[in-house]
Structures are given as C-alpha cells and as structure tokens.
Length: 161
Ligand code: FES
Ligand code: FES
Image 1 (tube, protein in one colour):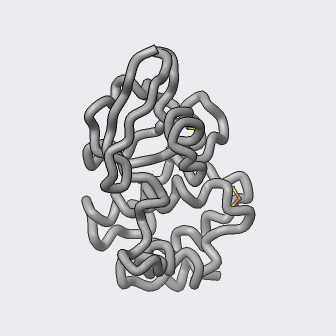
Image 2 (cartoon, rainbow, N blue to C red):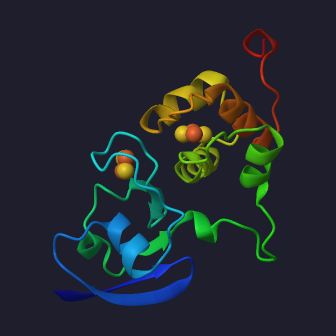
C-alpha cells in the first residue's frame, strides 16, 4: 500500500491504495466519486473518461499511482459554481442526449475536451472524436445533436431525419 494524493475537482485528496489500484477504482472506492462509471474495464467503452492534467484519460487504463500529484476532473466537477448544469450538461438534457445515462459522464467529459480543442466541430469530427465512447443505448444521434448545440451549431438537416 502507498499513500496517493491528487487534486480532484479542485480539492486535494489522499488515500492509501495498492500499486495495482486503477484510477477509476481510486475515484469510486476511495473518494466515493461514483459518477465515473465502469462499463468494461478493458479500455473499450469510455464510460470511465476523466480529465487528468487537462487530457482525456480512460480511468481504467491508468493506475492511481500514476496519477499521484495530478490534477483530475471528474463529472462531479463539471457543474457551474452555483451547482447548475454547465453548457454541455444542459445541452445533453435539452437534446435528450441520454437514455439510461450510463455512458453520459464519459460522453460529457470527452465532448468537453473536444470543444476545448475544436470549438466548432463538424458532425463527422464529433463522430470521429467519440469513437472511444460507446453508448449501449445507441443514442448517438441525440448525443451529437447535444454536442453541436453546446458548440452553438444545429444538426445538419440531412442527418436530422
Ligand atoms: S471502463 Fe474504462 S473504457 Fe470502459
Ligand atoms: S445512454 Fe445508455 S449507454 Fe448511453
């Protein structure tokens, strides 16, 4: 066991963990931040996506020890300061970008990073970027609509049928 410290959503947290503890386990089981989901544990689904030092990371692909000293943001840290939904979260709600909601935290984290890198992505660029995020409800159409809306764009008419 080793003591691991990281800043998560702006607060410093420390907890003991084994060397084999994954970052997603550390977040969920040690810090009780259960908004980060585990859909596969094999780096396929993206439900566990968080930001580590400003980069999208699938938290099941990183050991907690590798994030020692890092700045981590999870879905719990995405709301506005007053607790209201941020622009991306609101767009998912407004455009029905979720069904069961299992993939949603990872989708929101990935989509947020996409708009940081590319503020006006095309529908195709969104589809390409989200290749690592799987929605088992197959709600991709509305997810893309939500991300376009969050970037101030409408769904192209041809794809909106
Ligand atoms: S749980 Fe990490 S990619 Fe599926
Ligand atoms: S909304 Fe159910 S997995 Fe995406």
